Length: 480
Image (tube, rainbow, N blue to C red):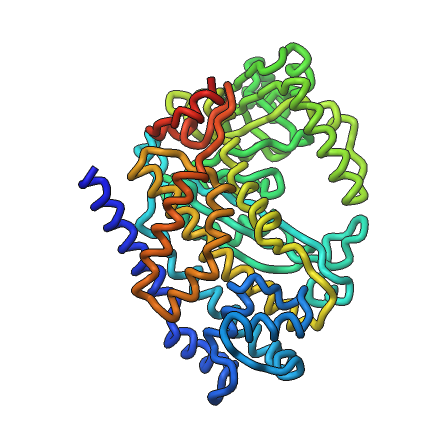
């Protein structure tokens, strides 16, 4: 027990140092001067403005100027007029906050965090990429054009890629709602390293990306679009009189719908070597998984909702194949079974949990009509808040595992961190030596109130990764 407490204390102190390196009065003041946000000493300092835009739960675009000024006075003791505050929410302020956000991305706060897994010898990193989007007032459409469809004239899309084992945020890009998922995957190709496992949804489906991943000696698991042709090598090749094989007879097309009709609920069917796409450039492993009736109902409802939202009509073939999940991967069967391929792809849901916390806990999608600079101050302020909160949340989950052998819930841990984040920032700036006490309080609350709920016959992330952990008595009762 003494050794355990010493290790925890050491880990906490190390993390406190990492956080202090991200935020200091001096660092924020330097960035403020570099971006031109601060030119001379005024009524409000750089760190105080960061507090307002990021950590005071004030929402500079959603609350009134009166409310914002009152919060500044009540929490920090700064007295400023509505007009003066409105003037400070300008282009220079946006540049200032954006620069802080970019610097945080480069720092990789949780660099020393890693969840040990039985798959470490096969995959150095498990990278999950997805995007989330939300609507903004239509008057912003020149800067943030929407994706089209019903009532999507203006919107913001955030691309996020994070690494599951070290929980580092690898790539974050903020752009217009009209931005393409498909092209973003290609933009980050050079960041892929040997041994990486790439998990992406259908929006990022790109043959060239898969070929590039293979060239880099990395791995992928992806769903296959139902309208993409699938071929196998034809055993009955036809030949010309001169002995040359007929190109048209080299491959034989197979139809997923025909195979699906012969499968029962939760059945899996695998073909080791298939060629996908009209050009047949990608040779891959194909796994089919037949959904249960309950899973099919949920997928159909989601498909109908998305089609209506985007104003598109699904083809009969697409509708017919909703009852099956089609996976492709370049991982050999000896390493990952067809069942494990299905389980590993389900890890992609972790990024959806992150997006859920962004919206349900931090309300990043709540936007009122204000001048565009004020909205952007809120946007980048929220992103700074999310980066710091995510780093703390990920670290606390890792510490709970390493020091207590427990699996903490992402959402519950995030809720705990959200309640402490303003105090944590204030201590980082004003009383850095007290940061450790805040972190210890967060950890105690996570261990007491933030553990993962276990459902019967449903694997958690730790189960899929083969992470060793223990269940508390209350968790064991629910899982039984």
